[in-house]
Length: 493
Image (cartoon, rainbow, N blue to C red; front, top):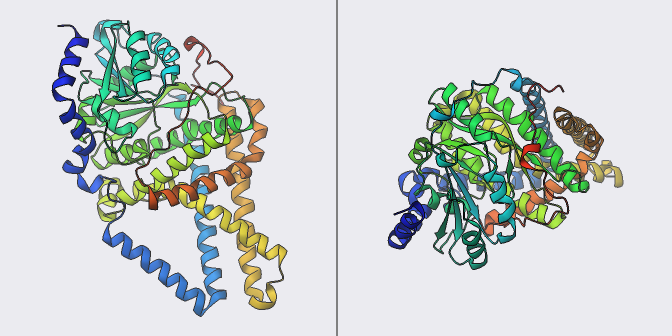
């Protein structure tokens, strides 16, 4: 019986059981890491105590309370900006080391590729062409397309197009939560490869990415369980939003994550191009189907299991959201997921401190917590500045109000100037110098991020597991051929 017929037979017999495992394995094996529960009783108690304490302080001594709160907001904003600046400085030289020696064809292991798809029939031709162009022996790679069983259009397109024997179509039974990580967990049950990578529908990985990953895994200790390839966009120059998004990604994947790698701080993964040792991925029960940034959570869980994530000197090109609505829903989902991840791993702070060490613990607070805290604090600082400029509030608050407004202005001016500079630096690594001036618009872009952050917070309270689906195939720019990808090794700032 060939591979496809065998998979079909296994699905018919075990689909229900495998779908149930995909949705609940993590919750059963490691309940403390499942985001199905939003917060513990202790976290709710602390949160309520903070809100009540702040309310009482504002009523009892409004001037002192506003001064303290403004100092806290400003300190959080500035700490996040400074920490990222340090990461950029440390991560700038990360790719200057010589690459791992290549592995000859006869020693290449079986490599599994998981691609969760939902309502993406139009993306299949480009996806299959990109994956077929990967420079890896055809008999040593398998591609598992994980499709929702009721997505008839995509299933029909996949089965019609999947003439290549490396491709197999899996049908994820309907059920909640309907999320990408649950589909990935379902596919993981069928994986045979020593290594596993997850891609998205619009991904265009550089052709040698699997070979580079194998070489890196062979050169590193077993404790390195995951390699995160860089992500960026093939339609970066389409409009203002895609340019800003490309600056954001260049900073994140070319500087910040390598900086975390150099420091040994637990690294949140990107949503795609995560290369795993399959055994390690299964040992930690795969992805959390209840976390809408399952990638960020997975990187932290690997660290807590005594494993680590490293960066991979290879790029996967994606489609940047070209409309504000599509970008906004995607970003608010990410922000909600970072809040989920922070809540999950702060259920037992002492355990996180013990597993990650003091540096890792502080890095987690600044990078995971700081991502959404900065987004929430940004408009509050702007509000304080505008209030001090537009109204004569000094009459009621006296000289203390001047201090409040000075602190807010300092945080905004210094923090946003630093963020703008870092955004400009990100484009230089890739030689995209024409995008650098757009970094001056970073404060406007971060204002949009703040709006998405507040929507993510609202959804965390009302719809924690709802998955805002990102629409693909909306760009007017066709992706470059897979062979046109480039590396940034040895590039200069």
